[in-house]
Length: 246
Ligand code: NAP
Image 1 (cartoon, protein in one colour):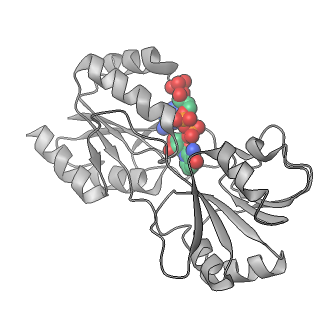
Image 2 (spheres, protein in one colour; image 1 turned 135 degrees about the vertical axis):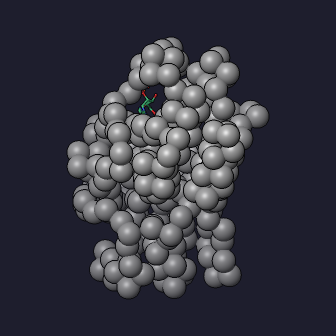
């Protein structure tokens, strides 16, 4: 069973580690190539865009791919849609591996918003010092916010226009609760902005915000294509792959 794993997440690396080298499986992981020093999955890896749906369809056909796992980040909406279209055209089995989103707990002050633009609008009313922890993509949506000061945390520097008053903090998770509590206090943060990425690697900021009584602007995930088969964890996808291979 020759399988393409669309990656860029911890779950994608975990699946590649389990399936690579297993008898009867030939696994290729794909990364977009956004991060300068990516964490590489075990086994075969290709890097870079495919060239839209058409490019992906051609790549799948040329490489004899028999099944596809979309294990990209929940906010990587374009590649998930492209995967769904290309797999449907070629009648290939496709599953989307999506870790569950976060759920508010007692004491949380979350404001859910549908997208980055709504998040930029919401922070205007919530405070002057903003912790922007949405990764390097999407920071441009806040470039017009001239009044607030932003602490922008990302693995690599964001490209494009940034809000004029900011500090850039380059760091890769996982982060510890004590460190997040200290960061919020040191930078005198009023409001936290995050994508609803889910998972435990970056959840500490939510605990820290709860302890500090700070509001969190939580950006909802983009929807997956209609009819998508969604699985929440690596074990489920591995079971699915093994039965598809039988
Ligand atoms: P996106 O908006 O859905 O994709 C934009 C384009 O990047 C796609 O059309 C595709 O180019 C290429 N691409 C994306 N993922 C790819 C992959 N795994 N392999 C090959 N090409 C890929 O995605 P994104 O939000 O830019 O995310 C890019 C990568 O970063 C993904 O692998 C994702 O898992 C990871 N990531 C994203 C976030 C986030 O917040 N968005 C956070 C952590 C990690 P072509 O059309 O040319 O094929």
